[in-house]
Amino acid sequence: MKTLRKISLLTLSALSLASSIQSQNPIITHKYTADPAALVHNDKVYLYVGHDEAKAHENHYVLNEWLIFSSDDMVNWTEEASFPASAFAWAKGEAWAAHVVEKEGKFYWYVTVEHGTIPGKSIGVAVSDSPTGPFKDALGKALITNDMTTEHSDSYWDDIDPAVFIDDDGEAYMYWGNVVCYWVRLNDNMIELDGPIQTVDLPHFTEAPYIHKKDEWYYLTYAYMFPERTAYARSKSVTGPWEFVGLLNEVAGNTNTNHQSIIEFKGKDYFIYHNGVIPTAGGSFRRSVCVDYLYYKEDGTMQKVLMTSEGVAPAR
Image (cartoon, rainbow, N blue to C red; front, side, top):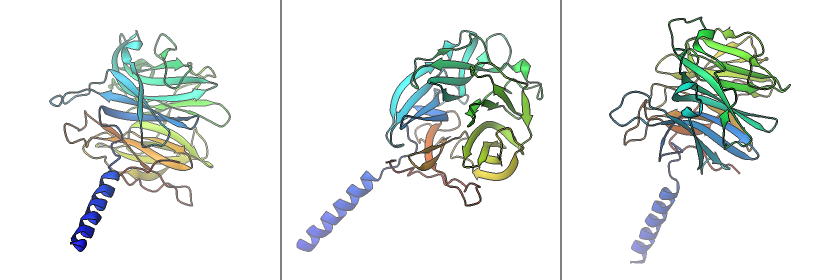
């Protein structure tokens, strides 16, 4: 009996341990979330995502708002606020991929929306004194409209997926695009262009450009081909020239799109992305944000990201 009791206790202990090591990916499961953008501020991570609202039978994108989450350990996330695409009176709506940066105590949220009078997607910018808002339209008009980018003239969604990077000297740059990768320098006020719109020639560029810096290297990651993988190039300058390196990760589970954010937090590097694996009704139009570790090699290149269901351990 003692032996059986010991085995039972060991079994219960194992089950208890198994239940405590729960899957962390996706990190948000009560709502569908997509196109993550992360910001580290005051020892906390703020996560800005699109809210996929398409019903199970709808096979198209339905996004009316963005959501804000926060975490101090990359595991436990708190829903902070929402921000509707209707906040931009000049737009029709459609809260596509966005990005937030902080400069001199203000937080700038660059968004993709459908323009109300100029056909096609456009980029707007909102501003707040807090990473959780309230945000308001900073311009009262679009920063980028479809008629400003003509390299792919038959597309109405050239101008999507803005990502802004502030360099060590305080200069800010915005990258964006679909099929063609665009970039432009921003004015010091962060809401005006400071120079001409330029392009970057990248192999099989689809969308979702993102800039980050590690040590001496600048990295330009982006969605590659379709269904989308994530590939990257690197440079010693934020404006290039860019040297293509290769793939960073493969097609994410059960979704055609791939959209990344890369941050360093409490001494570790993280790759934030979305997939479509929630079993109830996930997929390309009902996506979910995930987090896994990112590692660098001695030569400054990045290891391919291992996408896991376990996710990451709490950051300390």
